[in-house]
Image (cartoon, rainbow, N blue to C red; front, top):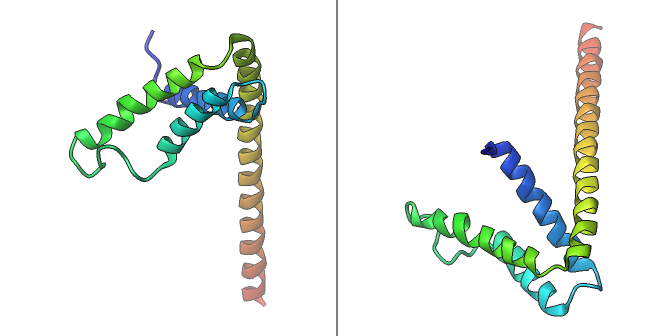
Length: 124
């Protein structure tokens, strides 16, 4: 069964969280942490092997090299730690969604209060 794009992005985000927790844990070997740091650094770096402005080829490295790097980095994490980090990642993703939703609701309410307040001042 093929996953839609939204599900794939959610899975990728979960894997990045797993890598984040692995990079912070002292039980993960130093060479695994080094490789994880290289993968995360490449993902966040504005410098690519093939610049993005080159048609088609520019995005090819992001579509091929980055997922391969993530897969290899995940394979360097011991299985028992991987499951622990996966649970932490799921909790973090759930908490982040609820925080973002909460912040959004608060912003909407603050904007509505300001609109009502300034509208009331103009009526006087």
